[in-house]
Image 1 (cartoon, rainbow, N blue to C red):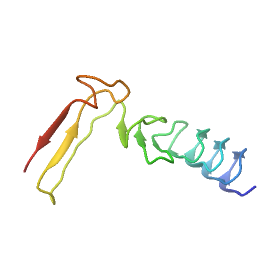
Image 2 (cartoon, rainbow, N blue to C red):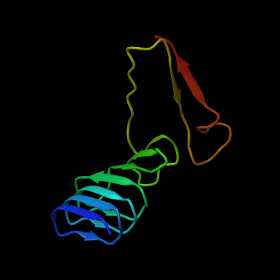
Image 3 (spheres, rainbow, N blue to C red):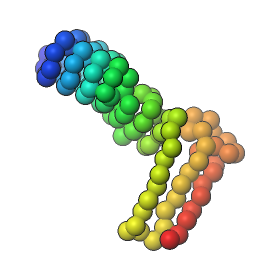
Image 4 (spheres, helix red, strand yellow):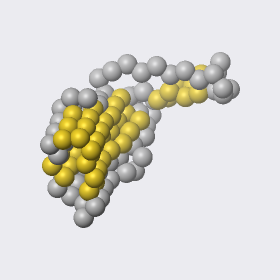
Length: 116
């Protein structure tokens, strides 16, 4: 079992895991935690947070969640505002909606394209 801990008061309960900070718990293989008092039970994922709740989660499939520990899209922001700024390309696209519910008005159906 290869586990790495930096800080104090860890509970590393699985192999190939790492924890940085204080009072973190990992119970899934290949999981990482950075912060304070965060629990990670998702294999192959990384969770980051300053206090008892992961603020950013990156899953092994490449999905990244801000404000959620179970993102279903490449980038999912929950309960927050998002600013998009692109200065080096000719166009961009923003998709809006609920990523967990397919259909009209949801992420798979609604998009806004813009050109600078």
